[in-house]
Length: 282
Ligand SMILES: Nc1ncnc2c1ncn2[C@@H]1O[C@H](COP(=O)(O)OP(=O)(O)OP(=O)(O)O)[C@@H](O)[C@H]1O
View 1 (cartoon, rainbow, N blue to C red):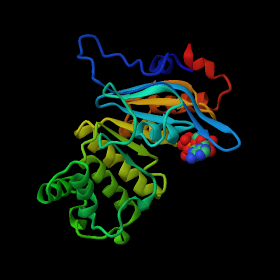
View 2 (tube, rainbow, N blue to C red):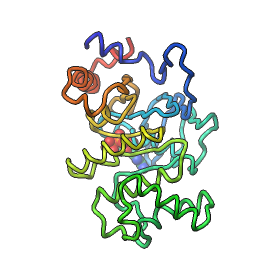
View 3 (cartoon, rainbow, N blue to C red):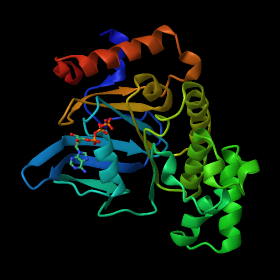
């Protein structure tokens, strides 16, 4: 590992330092020493083992690790869909004890939209239900969110008439319209073709930077992680344990192919597939 990437590699999770003189960013999410178990009739499976991480306002933390290491489980626990076995999850200092409109999830699957509602109806529906907005206000906010993802022309279309990429754009618009404290994304582009995936990555990045969305993002793809994230949190193979963290906020689309970008990709690769994960903690 190079000296530069060692410098980018933090010694422990969640210890992002504000630069001298800068105002410390507000902590939005704290995952503290969390273990997650799935309890079956025969046995209990430990999916995640004592993971800690912090996401501050405007940060984009990417969970990265091999299949089955517990990335989605952490996201589900943050969403409040599954309980923690040990440790705690705090959102703005309050313990997460179930789902809430302050956390919205965008999934990989294209079927997350309500098929009987139009595009605008899909975005407006949770605004009326969870945010208790009136019909007109919900519609206006839905239209504004859909304009941001380039879907103004599809307001009155039904989901079955949309491409996979358009469906994911609707799901992103629906999530952002809710103005959650943190947006949770579980491999949102994994089912898309390469070109559409690339376009959506770029558009998402521009959007979340523009409106300073705080993001927890799960992916298998190291390249996607470096492109989207300000920070990477690497997990070992099952059960998921922290093997290292990287700061990647200085790298974007324009840096692809640059020595710095390739170095991070190589170092993350080495760490994920190395049996000497202890190196991450030096
Ligand atoms: N509902 C469940 N019941 C029992 N075991 C589960 C359940 N959901 C996940 N698991 C197990 O927990 C472990 C972690 O799964 P999880 O889906 O969180 O991993 P992941 O890193 O997101 O995987 P992938 O990248 O393949 O989606 C796996 O061994 C999985 O089989």
